[in-house]
Length: 126
Length: 184
Image: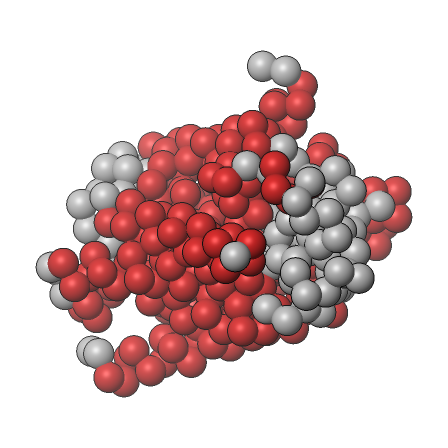
């Protein structure tokens, strides 16, 4: 495998493993976070963001990463995502990991996500 | 709840480490929804047909928007093949996690909570598919998901990402509380 592909494969493998071992792919665990009955996942997420703030403050300048902008779909898109996330327990990464774990129902989630991505692309280029 | 899962601090370290590793290796912020989009649709149109807007969430009516409008779309957006490699690797990582964690491979059902809300039949499948459409459409419209806005964007204190993350977390919390009230 070429170095370019290895640079994608390594973090991909790692992220799938972390998300799976953390239990982000477990609908019950995610739901218990969203109704505040178990804050384990929320704590993990909050710690990750805080660590990343430190990392990017220290090393971020050299990376020249692009800035995010306020655009028309930012908030309405996030609202739709929030509803879908609560219903299915899946964000795009979670659906991938669930399918990787051999979950049959997650195939429906991932298929829906694929259709949604396609619809968005269609709406944008139409 | 489940003793087989990692404690919160190990998960936080893992998530942060992965996002930082990806940004370092690829030179663009990690964003799974953008990677999934490019692995499905390719990166062709984003570079030629729509040069004035970001390939992730650009708005056609705003030609002044910089090409780097959104996450996963820096000066050198990952091409289709690396995106596909990432997506497949993430699935393999999940399979490995299931094997190491003792959950095994192959599951015919979701967690019990899901079936408590939505039953066992095709209605439950429809919820997953329909909800999935909301997730796919919403994340691309918003220009990021839990990783792109949540980790990469918030980690860099990007105001749009902080707003988007607060929005999808808030809406997911409200939706879940509503589900507990009306579906249980």
